[in-house]
Length: 431
Image (cartoon, rainbow, N blue to C red; front, side, top):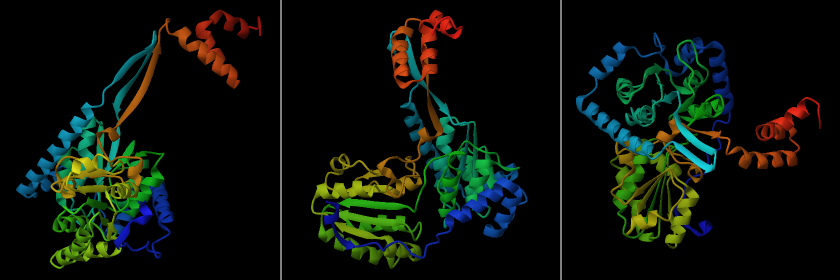
């Protein structure tokens, strides 16, 4: 079914000249940070950022100055976003409950919800000071109850980014960026403590560093360039479709933007509308390049093919602009976050509506969702068995252990059911 779609505009193929040595470069950065600690961070700060902070940790005075220098309206808007994200994270956490259940008489099973103790939130510098970025990674950690939340951001980041890290709830903030920040948070240096889990988006170097650090620490996900797709029928508005694609396209020249529609008229009008809006867009240099490289418009035969295409793409942001968007949305299973109806623009989630904007890319939505408060807690099981429960559990365990040839397991089960018999065996009185 997917092969039968018609491309009104195809994306370009992958860049054959892309740097193929990223893995080796990041590995070298990690190894140097592990062996040299802060000295390596200073060297990489000079190399990549052209500045070496007097100290890596942001001081209380620097935080105060960042807050003082923050535009009043920008602070109010940031606090609005923080409150929205906090409210939604609190509501999500409330759906997660400890469990105690007696599955058989005397057999008690359960789980606890335990916050990850120490988390590291990477805050990207990027092309713009994206003030929502620290909100999305830090606020859910505060709601989850993590004991120590540290934030790392490039030393050249806008001071307002430091202010928002503080407002969002970071306990400590460090001026270190790139792969070296990931290495520092994973293995620790003289200045930066090691953490249990690292979250937050970043560039290709940051992403690769998270991949290589996984195992030493937990990570939220591996993220590629941002993505947006919209599913539309003939009721959609080409102006809105074009505006939403270009809004996402201005993130990066590698951003993937697309439209899948059952209407050739909508497809062709949207194609023309993109070009029209690009002519007056101040960020057209980036957005236009992303559209040229990665933009795509697909014509589908009917809604069934539209939905199949969406599930195949498993895109990060998926908008639904159809006559009955809720009905269409209910049929889709693979997406990072779903935006139902034309009023629900991705930009609202990107900035302040409350859902998290750190989402799976590269079709990872087939098997995972985005960053949420649940990423900062562990669901850890426990069990306890009283005397009534031993016979019900021990006999099957004994038989299974015997079948598997695992006699130590058999004895460990049987000593609880028939201790005298096991004592006799272990003291040589019988086989």
